[in-house]
Image 1 (tube, one colour):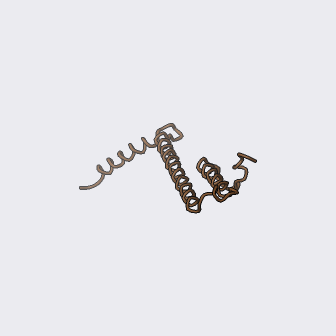
Image 2 (image 1 turned 45 degrees about the vertical axis):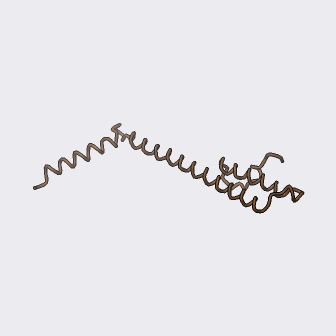
Length: 113
């Protein structure tokens, strides 16, 4: 089963590029740690360094992608708000702004000094 790392993953683990990259690096470390000869295996110190680097890189990539998707989602929400029309085809955001300023103007005319 060479090269089929994805086949042994827990099906509940989300298969994202970040996760698959981290899993591949963990597999490489695992194989190095199971080398038949002690001299071919990494030290515990080196293994811990590799594990921390895998974690650090995974979290950095996940955070970067989360920020990217959040920015895209926020942009999509803003675009959809600005381009929202009611059933009569009027732009709601523009109509709301003009209604708000009209209402404020009419309040000024009806309020006593």
